[in-house]
Length: 295
Length: 281
Image (cartoon, rainbow over all chains, first blue to last red; front, side, top):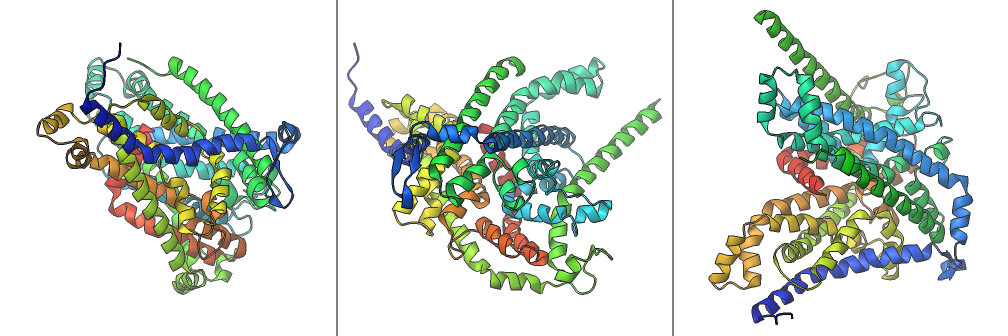
């Protein structure tokens, strides 16, 4: 039998509801209703003159699914992630290990690597696009090359990926340093007494004990890379010949939903992305059990 | 023996710094090139032979003034600042309240409600955008500060962050206060809330940086150059000044500099704020 609530408990409950009310009402209006609305909209088409939603069943999914552009953009997004995630993480890990111990200029280095984190990607992309310029760009001038960095379909995705790596290493580095500082120093001392080399210490102590941090970064960066938009939008013009082989799913979503005004098509694209991200999340959760060291 | 070990250590030390300096150089070059281009004439910026790293003659600092005027940067700064201000206030206020309730109070439905908070964090944000846009549009709030702030009125992530902050405080504090006759609200406002200041600062910085960097939302709700933010303003500019590189780079500099200066001054809070927020996500 349930105990009757005391007056004090009742009061506490009322305060609890009052305090969560703004957030919960906001989440329902701003997020939960939109999720349902977007899923519903993916089964609808926008009527003429932007009037209402007309239910058309799976027709959007058939159109979107049979359009090779969709799968190409999904593949482009994965390719971008293949550049950004591993390189952004490996370089950041090296920097974090080097900067974990006190050394000359440590805070200066850290400040410099972190700067892109506070810069608007729109501005960053403009600068890189100028450096990538085929005729007058800094890169081609310095290396005496004639590379079409962002308009050659074969390499444009790499060029965008490089901007992504450059932008993120400082952030990943700071998260890694946080993880490294949680590893007790005694472990290293014991290993040193046993005569383990520094590389050996890195493999046997740092890698396993840092694996929760590493996993966390991998997971958030994969999701972040799969929803990449700003860099793509700023770097890749609509007239760029490499666009088809570079544009991400969210870029395509933006074009359909807001430039072309086809909300149903856009909603379908974003639902496909949602399903894709959910699958990745489940796979990552499974991998976490196997790969992350749980003492 | 000892000497060779010392030499080895020295060599490693040097290699480490060489690597760090090269990496720093790679990080700085885009910014340096941005500023160096911004002070050139258009001719200098596109002359390949001779290739100018520095402006050949005078440094045209007046380019900044021209861009500032012709692009009404004052308005862009104002719009961006207002958006950041209201988003930070809304996020910190609502998340502090909800975080306290989730972290400290007992009430029915708490588990389900908190599950909703977690679900929101797992879903990619793009899925909310079309309906959010339609709502702002129906309210007639396109091209307003309210429209810019709208998706940031509440924050699931902030609620989660603050909940952790409140959970971490010792129980005894509240018990002592309760004995002294403080009610729930007084315990919150006088005793616990001041102790979560660092979580609140973290959330504030995180929210500000996120809002500052956002591009898609301002492009959608504020299509007018007079109402939009720095990010979306730059996107417009790039379309118009396609080949005017000094102009573009001056604009990019103006968009980047304020936040970088603030970052360099409040470095510790920034790095900690973004990292602790990010680390708990």
